[in-house]
Image (cartoon, one colour):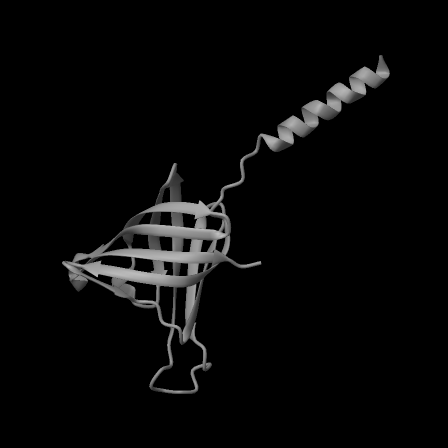
Length: 146
């Protein structure tokens, strides 16, 4: 009888642990491609001379991008970063950009459809900031950093 109770407790414990679904977009992601569509033109916005990561936890996201020459070449020196809270409902991922070094982008919401395939995160959506005249579709692909 004790053995049966022990097995039952073990099964309940294992089942309850497995019932917690991990958010598939949580983690650290490195940008591997990016494209933008404006009006009738689609073009790559991926810069192979930079490295960008996106970090997503249970409530916030942050992105960091910098040039690979450590800012030593003034013609290609680049650094930008931003972040804020996000929501995820099914495949709809909405970023609330609270912080960004280009302050004109702050306090805007950006809605994306996200899909995770193996170690790749794909997000597609519209970036629109009226005061900057920004209105385009972006598709970004990230690979999970290990």
